[in-house]
Image (cartoon, rainbow, N blue to C red; front, side, top):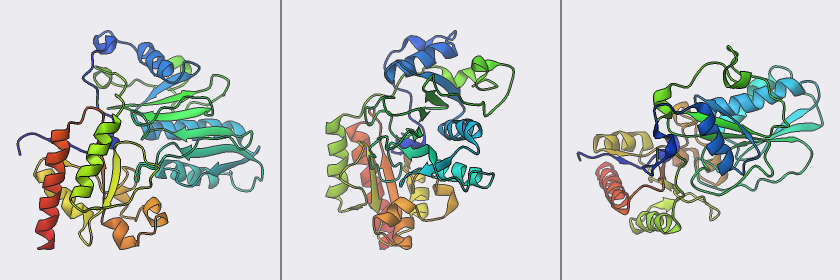
Length: 311
């Protein structure tokens, strides 16, 4: 297969081919930040980061250092591994014994199963949300969010309530109003536009193709469009991914945060999968620019690869 079929769009939201005023070489940070802020309702500030994971670290650590010895950090069920590992590190460094919750961390969308979580305030804590898997999939704003981590193609962003004081994660020479030292390479910012929403019809087409080939789906009904996790029935997901890549089709064994750990994804275990079943699962994620032809060809190649392993 000469052309590549990318069905792993959660590893970086691809640049939309839609025209954008930000395609000029003279594009600056402020234009991108303004565009992201406006998309979220216009009542937030935005910091550009190297990735969504940096944005998560910046949000949690930047707020926590100001809250140290004032309260505890609560992590909601389903939070990404990036959130959990960041909080784990903080708890090793003094955020252990407090009773009153001052910071709550959660994900908007589970990047392994696509499950959508309700973002609701249950207390007066600062709400930090990982929205890396949500852009282009669900509509949300900053109404119940204080800090929101986002992932685009080649870089990330941290949107936050202007009333929230946050320390820099990376110190430098005053870049981005002193909030984040250093620069994002300009080449990574060229051609930026917000990801297009995934049409419901395209998501339903993806679901129909997966069901047509008899794959077991490991995803709740409350699922973000364009994310489906399936079981491979005794076949190693990593081995399948290698053969898929050789055929020009790209998917993922799980979320980007957990793929390299070799540990079963906790979200799949909560759905009742065994450890072996979780390690034999595969995630398909599309964007609003994925075509029906790409879906059909990609799923067909996946079926052929799995059949080859089972025979």
